[in-house]
Length: 294
Picture (tube, rainbow, N blue to C red):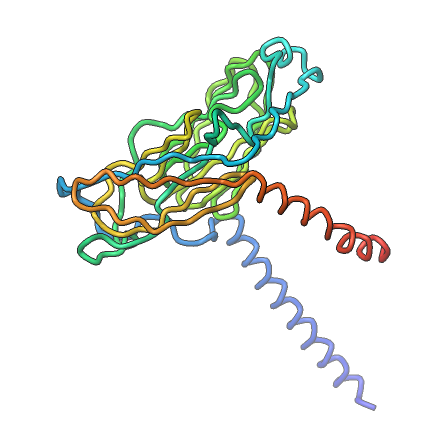
């Protein structure tokens, strides 16, 4: 058996070790609170200078098969919403004459005709703020693209209070109430991040998607399904089309000097519905064993 003095010495050493560990852990916590440690911001690279040979990518996003019926939204929970937007419809799938709206199309990566990667360039964001409005108790636009560090201004045109809940993974999120007539909420996002969901805690049907890009090479399909990506230097690029329900499609596109290249995308409604059915079929096999453990 160790002597009393030895036991006291061992106890003292253990106490010192625990105090050191607590101090170290406390320091790490303070750093997380004070510093944004999500990763590097989009500030590196050689400033991009247009040569005058830039081209463009234009196209149309088609929807094949039977279009799903438009879904009505009940806003009776807030009379201000139901009176302002009595015929509100969901915007997750919007099809007009076989064309799919709200598809975000962007250049993911690639190389210029000189063999330089787009990742080696730095692009200045546009000076004007991008605006996300709350109108008729829906977000306008439903899908939005901005550049990193570009200002996003969130406005409230409704006669009711909203709650703007933005929860990105790589950027600083916020969850802020915005009453009728309140000043705009202005934020920026220093890191590129595709698909940031935005919702309103007051009105659960309100959803929008923000895409933060490090380049200006992106576009959005309108009601006619058309999109455009402008001022793209000649080169070969991977171009992605993203839709919130039907996922991603990627194509390689080569743009020559001063060329406007046409690149169309198409989503198959029947295949999407079949995939959804398969997901539902396997869901019970995944869920039931998990429930039985509780």
